[in-house]
Length: 197
Image (cartoon, rainbow, N blue to C red; front, side):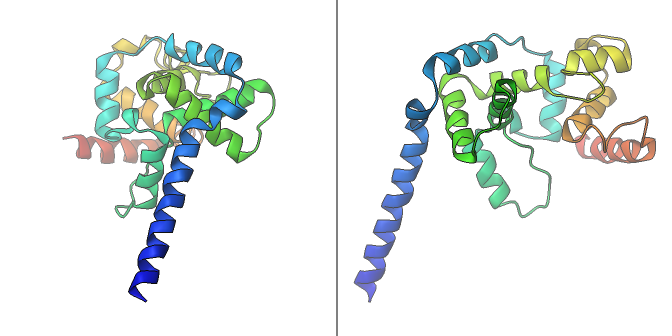
């Protein structure tokens, strides 16, 4: 009986290892190389944001800017704290690729593209692309557009409270709209402010 269990565990481990390795290289078989290289070049050319924005964001979502798709998935699976774990930047970026193509293909294709993006860019650059292209609704695409419209300034001039407001909008631009739900946004800012101290 012990021998059967050991054989089954070995087979299961081999299957998991093979699946992981396939995931890491299979995108080369299914994603158009020319198209993905053009897309990843756009990501790599994205302009970064001021350090104070990153520092405040990192206090609210520690490590998220550096989390790969696999790491974020594992965090969500083993999340015992009940805290919100944002989607990995590379997953969001691959989703925008499919939207730009005019159709969202099957989930497996989405996973292959995530792997392709992570193989050709850094997670930090994916995060910058995410911030530049996030749809805040009402024609506000990207943080620069949002900040200009909401606060009448540039991202480097934002206060910590304003960065928290923007981070809340990244979570959900409807739920944390300060014009629609000022009490909810104020409560969350106070809660996050306490956590930051």
